[in-house]
Amino acid sequence: MNFNRDPWEILKQTSRTFYIPINSLPKELRKAVTSAYLCMRAIDDIEDSDLLDSKTKIQLLRSISLNLQSQHYSNAQDLFSEDLAYYSHNLPEVSLRIKEWSLLAPQAIAPRIWDATAAMADRMAYWVEQDWQINTRADLDRYTFSVAGSVGLLLSDIWGWYDGTVTNRDHAIGFGRGLQAVNIMRNRQEDLSRGVDFFPHDWDMAMMQEYTRSQLQLANLYIEALSESPALDFCRIPLTLAYATLEAMAAGKEKLSRKDVLSLVAKL
Image (cartoon, rainbow, N blue to C red; front, side, top):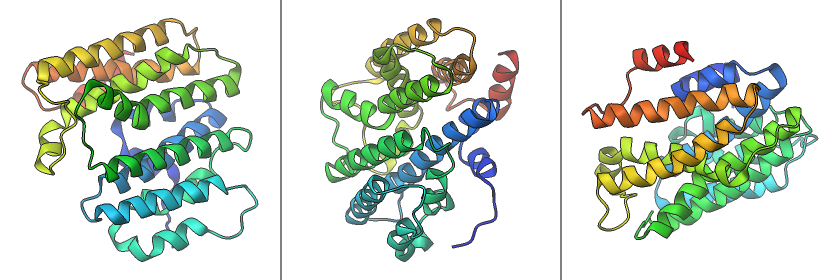
C-alpha cells in the first residue's frame, strides 16, 4: 500500500484539537507524541467503524496488539499490512499505516508507545465484545481509563523521557478521563444513533457533567504542577478546549466552531 501524505498532514486531517499543540512541540518530542496519537487514532477508527462488524473489529484489534508486541525497528516484514489488507477498502489511511506510525517515534521511547497501543487495542477489543455496555460508574471509569486515562500515563512517560518532567500519575489519569468524558457528552446523539450509550444507567446529562468536571479538576492539578515546559504548553490547550466545549454545550451549541478553537489557541 503506497500513500504519499506525510504524518503531519494525516495528523491535521484527523484532529483539529491536537494538531496545533503537537505541531508546536520540539522536533523529537513532536515525533514521539505524533507517533502515539496516530497509533491510537488508527485503532480508534477501527473500534468506531460502521463498515466493520464486531467480530472483525475484535480480530483486527487483537492482531494489531500482537503485532505491536512483536515490533522492533529491524522488522522487515509488515505484518500489519498483511492482517489489514483484506479490509483495506473499509479502513481509513490512518489505520492502514499503523506500522509507519509505530516507527515514527525516536527509538528510545517507541517501545513504550507500542506497549500502550497494544494494551489499548486489547481493551478496545474487550469493549467491542461487551457491546460497549456501560451500566455503572465503575464501568464508566473502566472505559474512560481504557481509551484515555491510560493515554495520560503514556504522556507522563513521554515527558519524563524527553526532559525529566515528573508528574502525578493519578492526576494524569484524570486528565485523560476528563477529555474523554467531554467527548462522550459532545458525541452523545451520534453515539445513541448507532446504538451505543456511554452514560451509566439512570444518569442524565447533569450527572455526566458532574463526573466530567471532577475529572477535569484532577487535570487542573496535573497542569498546575508542571513548570514552564513543552509538557505544559501541550496540556493546557486541550484542557482549555475541553472547558470551552462544556460551556458551549451548556449554551446549546453542539461543539466549538473552528473559529472558536483558533481564537482560544491564539489567546494561549
